[in-house]
Length: 94
Ligand SMILES: [Zn+2]
Image 1 (tube, rainbow, N blue to C red):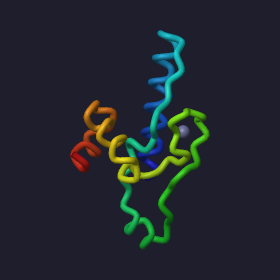
Image 2: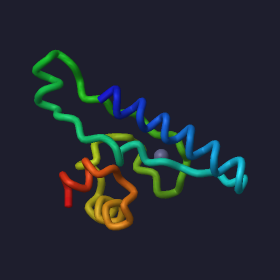
Image 3: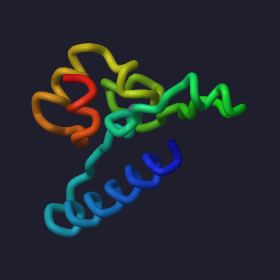
């Protein structure tokens, strides 16, 4: 769970630096595209599944960063079809 967050953050920083320096454009990144944590295992070990309120202000924002499986089906399909998700998500959900 934490590793996926750090990985996502690293990707965001790298992508942001690249695109902002080259094109001066703002980008957004859906952290939910990398989250496939096992709620049962986490809760059995005394943890709690991580989620976060999103304040990106995008007009299509869901308001929460949560597991990939919680995304609307059309969003999941779009992300998978366009390969906007890592292989472990594609392998699990396609
Ligand atoms: Zn948002």
